[in-house]
Length: 251
Image 1: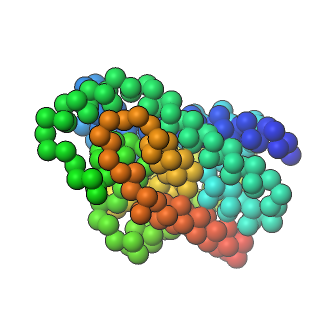
Image 2 (image 1 turned 30 degrees about the vertical axis):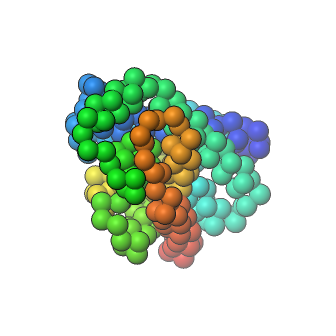
């Protein structure tokens, strides 16, 4: 249905918008001298939800607006169509990195001011992620690899399985309502399941910005926490695959 070129461009644009909104709201809530400083988790959850809304609606005509390798994997397992999966994944990774750079540029002055103010205080240990990493990628509240992995798997099933099931509801796709419902679904996952790990539920959403964080010229930014980085990639991929299998068996 969609050409490789359209998929690639659509997923880049849509995922970039998703990350621009998502990393942007995290920056707004986290950084000093931001007007939204300390406005809380509910604001973050809705910011990510609106990012899904804007990104998926924008990419929809070109690629269907997956914006997430776990969603692409779940759909491929459901449909047994694998030929274009690599195009989706490549576009999503490029888009995620682009969106992270754009969010950094929007908050460039705040990143600089945040570091300058923080330099007067005790700096974060070189072995711990600084607050800036949480703007780009997820950090678990309690570092327990097994528990963190299980959280990401369950949260991703809670995303991908409903997305697949929405396809059974006549008229949702044609009316565009399905994308709106998915956006609210992401908000709900953030509010209900996001507390333990920050709900990556999307390998590109976490890995792309983490790569960008590694190379961005943020002074005293600390580590990009690569020892944890496999969990928000593996967990959502496992969850997406399980959602596809569950859907095939149950529906």
